[in-house]
Image (cartoon, rainbow, N blue to C red):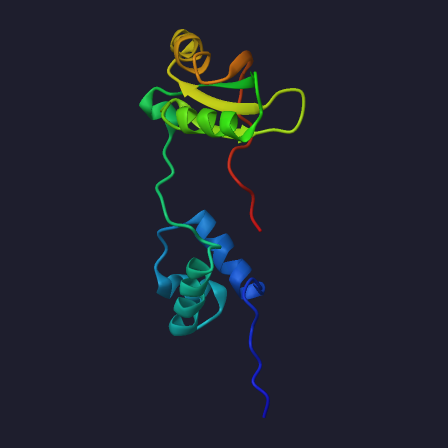
Length: 159
């Protein structure tokens, strides 16, 4: 009798359901997760472990409310560099990671090189972060800012 093996990187409907439930409630018990998925506890645990081991699930974290911490001002800064050679990108990347107000940083293909999501208490603090920290990062030629008026949707959608 031939052995049927699942290939690494494949997820089925049960795996997708596990991921969707965990996205909504990362603190759910394995017993409750198994019941909601329609599996017994042990197969559900094995699937969960595999999803973690294969990198589909990178970890579990608390989702914080930035406004409760006084960090409800969000701005996006477009950053243009003087050079996009690997050495310049590496220096910029290393330096931008040290700025706590930078929530996200993306290398972009387009009219600018990086898009930064910056979260601060207010516009005054943002101006300081932009002027004193971001503008002085290695190889920064120019920046342009868009201020968020309202966040309609945030976070990654389900699978």
